[in-house]
Image (cartoon, rainbow, N blue to C red; front, side):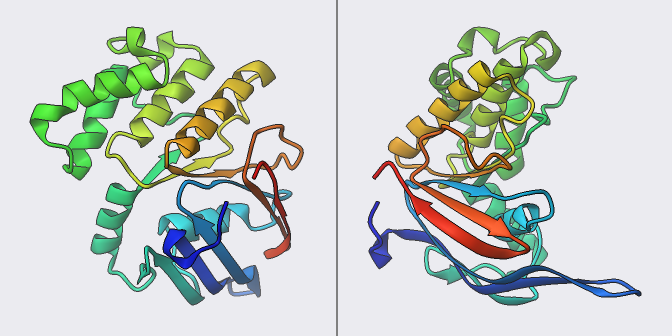
Length: 235
């Protein structure tokens, strides 16, 4: 990986997040400085309560920092209105969850189609072909007309990845995507993420497993809301 400015897709500058209750103030993130490159396969690790989920919410625009700046391709996103932020997220971020979050009453194809209709950036005439291509890419094209409940956990996660890719976002964020899978299936999902990064997608995986064998380009470890360490690997 390089660190040239024109290769950066996302930067966090002195990002902090505080939560205030009646009893006390809780600091979830403290002065996070992070530069993420286009095509990077990045892991964010740390124990429960280290700030991973809060950082994920900052990256995806689900929540706003208390202070600091978040830039996407050089433009600040943390000052966008909720409407503009939702539009930005739909067009630029694909999210993969640990428990898949597929709509159980829709087929796999219909799950992807709904994601496209929600954002409306893929022309209607191109959607069915794109769905077929995506399901081919993740290896489950034969399951397009099946309900999620008829698929294995690994197959459902592949469907969820295809859905995250539906609108051709620049960044894929995965929240504990292999936490509910056996080790063999988890390895296959990690291999899929690696191939997506190699194809130019930026892939950010949030995981508690610091010792994962996935071929991350970099591992950022959080501790008590701060970046404790960064490890560059697989250069």
